[in-house]
Length: 120
Image 1 (cartoon, rainbow, N blue to C red):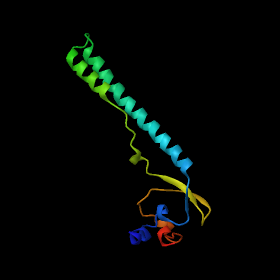
Image 2: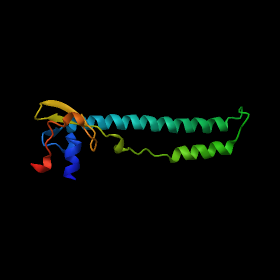
Image 3: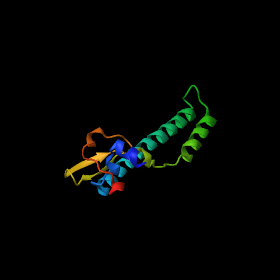
Image 4: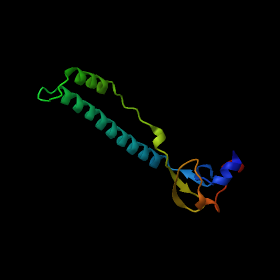
């Protein structure tokens, strides 16, 4: 495992990395807001389709289909997916700069400064 980390040189495993939890929490909140907006859009679209099917002026009028769609929309529950929030934030105590990274990815730009925290 340590050998793979030494090849990837990911800031997530670096001795010099200091996490910025406030910036991560801000990012988490923003992603939650985006996901909730998307969820509400999907639910609203389903309710609009239900209303369309239940409109008597509609040539394809099907009241029962509208009821089924409305029930389906009302069963929908929002669940936040934290896996989509993959960017982490912090600072590098060696270079004294703000950094961001995606864990478990190879970072070619950190090859010369990376020092594995598990080897310290």
